[in-house]
Image (tube, rainbow over all chains, first blue to last red; front, side, top):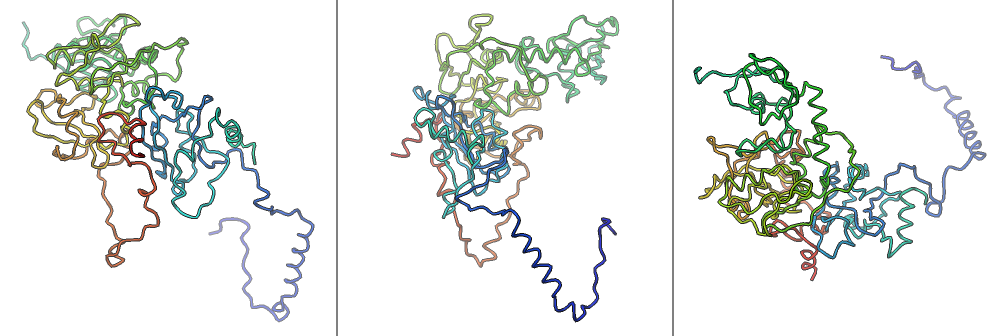
Length: 181
Length: 367
């Protein structure tokens, strides 16, 4: 059955003596190489140079804080239930009196872990989140020598504190919007 | 008088059913089942006197009876209106009903905090289901929501007054199941709130059933508070010989840990009946028997497959046979990483705690 109109019959005749010298084919290949001298180079000097990501690039997860530095996450479990790779686990705890400056709501995630070895960076956790607490930034998980380094916990996931570390916070926010390459 | 066995014919959403005289429209609709049955928030068939408050079960009566086939001018609350012979009722086939119900949902949600991500009832909440099926996406309410200070009503039950929709079910439970009621609805109008008089704790043996009848997350189990989400736990039917109650319960497990014990629910979200008697359970069964060894397991609970709880796929789960050891001549496979050696989760046995975990729970571990 013919699928397209562009199908070509393959010539299976044995090569003649002149053809088996490959002179014409070598010349053809050399010509292609020569023309590439005048074309723009597609490679870049990574890591000194990096390419910009697409606006919708989904990279490393960040746990968000609000403007006062309180954690948004309430450990509702919607990211974990949405996760197709089952990479997210968490444990919830109740906010004690006096911890109002740390957590935005009366319940918070005491433990929050993402297994980056399982994660497929689909972004469903970001879509499921009702509290704008998790988002995928424009960076990817750095390489690591061991597997243990890929279990990301809260200290690695949380965005820098906007009051205590305004520069780090600003940088993370810019990474989110894709301004930093 | 007429013979006592005469049945009334009533047509609900073009389905005719024969019921005993004295049946309400709602119970007749439940006899048909499915979408025909109006949703209820305050009516509870196992509690005498409940119903007539929330107005979610409004239906249109397009013909009163065979003798008087005039339609009823207004929508009627089906939980409080008895059927007549030849009555024709419209529920989901009536535009007016659907519109009115959307309005009722909007009213019920006026002061509701919508803190479902925090609420332990999320996933089995009747107000969530109602809002999802009958509500509109937005609200027109622009004012500050009514809020309450959190109040302690004992070691077992957590009261969240802000979530309450004032269905009065819990007061009927206290009246009809326990010897003395220490809580009720105080104040009136917008200030009405469920509370104990004056900060008493509720400690009657059957008081835990308030948690089961509460349609929202206003009364929740303190021993289950923030332990896990409902849809990550697996419901299992179990029973034990209990001297005070029927002992038939649903265990909500995670692994082999029992996180929560509730009464078994029927398809309307009400406590199941056994031999005509509702299967209320006592506080000992509910709060104290939190070990699998205390119970005789019957099998997984049947959950509606549209419920988020059934996402765990625990029914008919078969553990695949471990083949690696057979292939490797009895040697265990070499793990490149054991997740439990890295992960902080499960470092504290949360199911053994009497209440919610706090930052103190995790601090002690570090010391």
